[in-house]
Image (cartoon, rainbow, N blue to C red):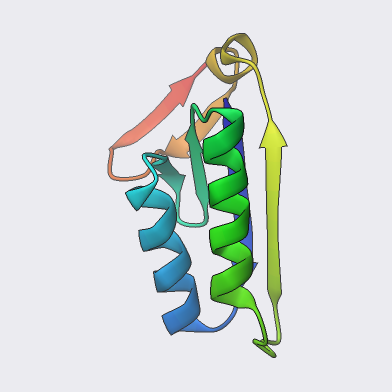
Length: 92
């Protein structure tokens, strides 16, 4: 399982990156965060795709990070406030 987070100031580029991540089967959990299961091959594809989308871009803020996490770690997360597209909740 992987957590992908990004800080991209260029609105059109940020939209493209989000659409790309969604197209790869990742689930949006925050405005600039996606999570999902990826095989090694799928991970390479995601990284290559994001690099291709962001290549040559001179954005004020352009940072994408990919973290491997276990399902157990994800399930143990604490959520404070509204999750993406939901009402106020606290998940522990």
